[in-house]
Length: 61
Figure (cartoon, rainbow, N blue to C red):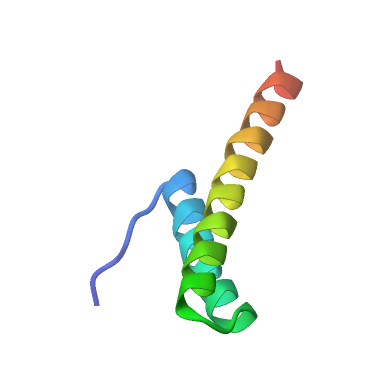
C-alpha cells in the first residue's frame, strides 16, 4: 500500500473538505442547501486555518 505524505496544511485542507461534505449532507434537506452550506463550512474552515496560523506566527515571534 503506497504511503501518502501530506504537509500539515494539506492535511488540514483535506480534513476541512471532508468535514464540510459530511456537514452539508447531514444538515440540510435539498441539494442546493447542502451545496451552499458545505461550501460555506469549507470557506470558514480555511479562513480559521489561516487566522489561527497567523495568530500562532505572531504569538511565537
